[in-house]
Amino acid sequence: MADRIADIWGERTPHAKGTVWPARVDLHLDEGLGEGDVDRWVQSACVLCSNGCGCDIAVKDGGMVGVRGRATDVVNHGRLGPKGLYGSTPWAGSADRLTRPLVREGGHLVETDWARAMGRIVEVSQRLLAEKGPLTHGFYTTGQMFIEEYYTLGVIGKAGLGTPHMDGNTRLCTATAAAAFKESFGADGQPGSYTDIEHCDAIFLFGHNMAETQTVLWMRILDRTRGEAPPRLVCVDPRLTPVAQEARRTGGVHLAPRVGTNLALMNGLTRELFEHGWVEDDWVLAHTIGVDELRRIVDPYSPEKVQQICGVDPEDLRRAARIFGESENVLSTVLQGFYQSHQATASAVAVHNLHLLRGLIGRPGSGVLQMNGQPTAQNNRECGAGGDLPGSGTGATPSTSGSSPICGMSTR
Ligand code: SF4
Image (tube, rainbow, N blue to C red; front, side, top):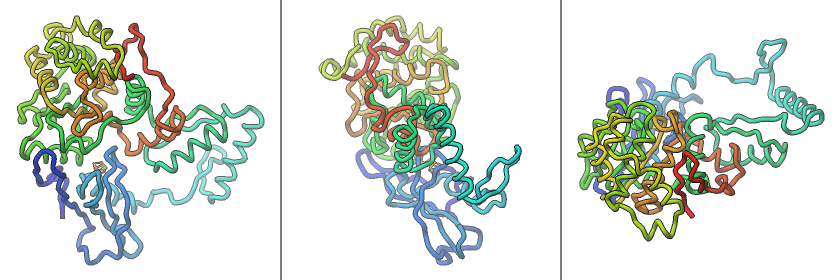
């Protein structure tokens, strides 16, 4: 059985560029049990981070006794990290886990049955709707439901009750991801796939300590960097994380900007693409608007200027830009180091700009993953259970305002 505490990422299954990520099944059962002791396996998914790994739950005598990764799942190909393998067992049997609904009586929560709890919700909702209308209602949604449930919720909230007050767990990471997508592409949808890892020549991780936040996705990258024709990594993070160490090991770069200076760093990288002609002019002309404005905005951000602001060695900035500029296919991922920082949306949009300048988007090995902290945060937004209407929030118009702090490049 796997020990994902002592060995977080497990043994490597290296493979070459363009080949399928090999399966490796991780398994954990309660002490003393073997696979032959399990009565049945129930298909499920780990929802403890945004990766959403497929798993089967082992059941014995009506109780949960373990977990194994599902080899055929497109996300994890059988692997599980420490949280997926061990996280569910303690709380699944925990004595203080809620098994019945609670309602507040005189300031205290007391147990009740489902009919009474739901009846109270209906009664209060009907009274508020009659007295004050639909704006009395608001929803703050989890990031752990399934797509059909989100869609139903969106219909109940917007089409049924008629309230626009729906926030889909978007306060932290997903707010920036959604805003950046709409700013660049006019729609809140991911222009990338995990399978891009198998086809790329370079991976840029912007504020994303994937090794410790999405451990199974990091296994997927490690299996490329340890295989034939590995990608080079570029890590943007003030800390010397395992991602930063792997970036150095692969001949890539670790850029460690001062906290709060991400946008200046991105302006410097963007300027380098213009300076060295790493721009697909025909593609940019055919598919984007605002490139001249972008060039004007980033022009002051020479590597030396960036060093003054960010404390990053100008040669490191040049090397990172060269990797982006000269690699055939580049995958970028973004997370909290960019989202929960100064000028978050503008910095996330700047990642899109790099890809748009080189036309590195929408083809195998080239894309952007604006990652989220919860597994179905994207579904939440796509189905209208967040701030937008169903259908990936389409209807938004990309900004073309040069005065916006968000550099004015976006898709046509
Ligand atoms: S990577 Fe995320 S989804 Fe996969 S097992 Fe670990 S916590 Fe669960």
